[in-house]
Every structure is written in C-alpha cells, then in structure tokens.
Amino acid sequence: MNVFVAGATGVLGRRVVDECADRGHDVVGLTRDDEGDEVVRERGGEPRRGDVLDRSSVVDAAVEADADVVVHAATAIPTDTNPDEKDWELNDRVRREGAENLVAAVGEAGADRFVQQSIVWVARQPDGGQFDEDAEPHPDRSTRSALEAEKTVEDAADEGGFDAVVLRGGNFYAHDAAHTRSFAEDLLSRDLPVVGRGLLGRKDATLSFVHADDAGRAFADAVEGEPTGTFHVVDDEPVTWATFVNEFGERLDAPSPRRVPAWLARFAVGDNVLRLITRPMPTTNDRFGEAFGWEPEYPTVRDGLDAVVERWREDGVLRETEDGYVWNTD
Image (cartoon, rainbow, N blue to C red):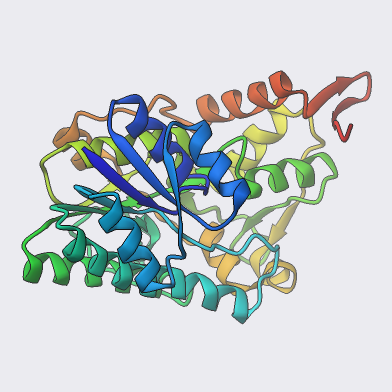
C-alpha cells in the first residue's frame, strides 16, 4: 500500500515509517527540513516537504503519494518541565487543525483508511478506576484537543465513507524520547521525585505505559488491518509513577528519589504535568490485541526500561564509571 505519515520525524512517526517500510509498503513522510528528510530516508521512506498546519501542503503531499492510508502521528507535546499556555496551544493546533487538514487530504487523495494518534488519559475516570474504550471521556486542559481530533476523524469517516482507527497510546517512553532522557538525567542528579497525592504524597496513581517501539508496531498493524474504531495501545501491566521512577533509577544506579506531595510539586511542574502522573489511568490492551493480534514486545516497564538503558550503553551516550553512570558529552 501507499502510506502517508504526518509526524514522520517524531518519536512515534519515525517508527511508523520504519515498520511500514519494512513490511513492504511505499511510505511517504511529511517533513519540514533537511534533517527531517534524512530521518525519513534512513527508515525506508520518501520525504515530502509540508506542514501539518498548512492544508494545501498536506493535501498536495498526500495526493502526490497516491495515499491508500493516511496516518496522523504528529504532536507538539511540550518538553519543558513547566510548559506555559503557548506551548500547549501549539500542541492543540497540531491535534485539531492537523486532523482537519489530514481528513481533507484523505478525500483529495482517495485514501480509504485513516489512523489517528490519541492518548488513553482522555478517558480516565474520576474515581481512578479501571476503564476501557467504551468509558465516558473526561478531558482536561491538556487532553481536550486530543478528544476533539478523535471526533473530527470519526465524523469525517461517517460522512466520507473511509475507515477510521483511533489508537490511544499510554505514556510513551524510549531511548530517543526527550522526556525519557530528561527523566534519566534528573534521576542521576536526584531531581526527579516520586510525586503522590495526599498531605505527604503517599497516594500513588496507577498509570498505563507503552514503549514507543510497541506503539510503532501497533500503528503499522492498524495500517494493514481491517478492524475500525477506537483502541487502547498500552503494555500488559499498569504501574504507579513511583514504580516507574524507582525501576528506572535502579537501572541507572541513581540515588533513591525523594517523595514529594503533589501540592508542593505543582510549583515546579504545573497542573497539566501534575495531572498526568498523579491521576490514575489504568486500562488494558485487550481489545486491540484481540482485533489485530498485537502483543507488546515489552510487556512491562521493567522490560522496556532494560532496553532503553541498554541502548544508551550500546550507543555510548551513557557511560559507566567507578562513581556510577554519567552522560557522555564527547
């Protein structure tokens, strides 16, 4: 098939390009500069210049690619520890306007399938309980635009007659993800705390994670498959933020992280980030696995973090010394 990927240079998108190309599909990835062109080529795709916020460039690129399937993997999630409103507004535009522009591209290119990236925490429940794809969404400031993008795609599919798949991912992590690298750096300098609710921060939230490699395979499966609808793409075992931080720290031989109550951490990270790590979002991959035959290569964060740290060591960016691990800046 001819697969057109928006967000082809991101942590998720470059894996979608790689997976689809490896499976024999012709992949065109939307890029904005020479560096992005190289990223797409290295993964077996053909770069095409454009901007997901520029409808004409997106439509032209999809038409030129003669796209059978369009993938919206673009985001602009803030990487700053305490992002401001402008940072979130850009991400909102990429989600909302990006979905609108790519839906238009589907019609112009004559594609018959659309795969939309979203996030599981749009549907986390007020009581912190387990939820699935049928649960009522409860969006907040940072997730509202993701839910709106889902609706844009679903409505257009109903009107336009193409198949739509919405994949809600868990918390992404990977060796080449900016957040994962930042977490590791902060763990080694003892600047990444375990944040919990309650007066002393002892109430931990159970979260759903997924390694970006597994998410990339899930998107490629959705590109090739026939089922439609909304699916959750997460690993097999929800864990608390405390577990994630402590497991990561152990693999880095980092000092034990401090525990900080959410009310105090708010001053450092802001409300949106704080909600992400202190409000439960336990869900499963059961529906997606049954529909597409998908299983995570890294079923738990323990497996995935082993791979992350090992990759850093192999690449030489993380070096072991007598005093522990240090980042290699050479």
